[in-house]
Image 1 (tube, helix red, strand yellow):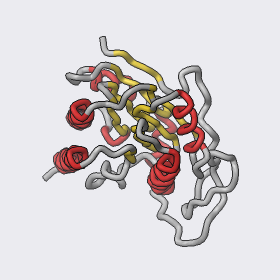
Image 2 (cartoon, one colour; image 1 turned 90 degrees about the vertical axis):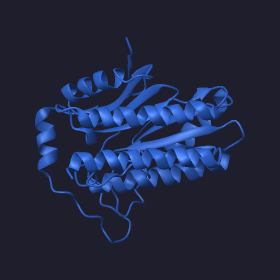
Image 3 (spheres, helix red, strand yellow; image 1 turned 45 degrees about the vertical axis):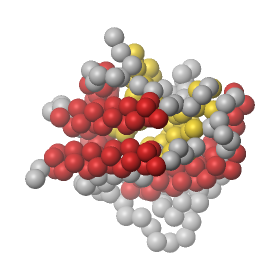
Length: 255
């Protein structure tokens, strides 16, 4: 069985697990990355192993902090990629929207937060099921493409809007956007992608994956408060992402 086929099966199983979880209960918070790791994906991830571990920790710690302030009108999905956090879902008031972002920004190692939370009623069960289906179709379409590296992107869907996170070149990002826009049910594509040059990408791919350290906490990186990191993984020097009027997200409507 080829690696591509294995990855398709892994992602289909992950999507099915998310859908089954949605059938069992309506939870107020979804952590974005835990079920998204397929066979061979860690080894081909463009993030360092330290960033991958940090992203899991950010999602878990961020989720715990959101639960502390949660109310019946909060339905939040937190997704971290290369220490950049995407917040999707809905809250009851603008004050809640701001509060969620504030607590997540204070989580260790968070470089930036893209707040896409909407104020209003939560998505229906049918909407969430449809979003899971759309994410699966987008991921499968990326895997089928011969000219884009599917593992460069993490896909999150909220009410038909597809959010693409990742580390990719401009060509890869534009191509992946076109692919996502061609999937039925997608109403808009929002790119939360760190654009790198072809040379930067070659440098990333030539670097061996670092193994997680078993030592104590180390300092490095920039957390939400700008203090020392509590991660047990050595972190490379990393500055906050540049701010933009759109908060780091680029919208590509479906035409």
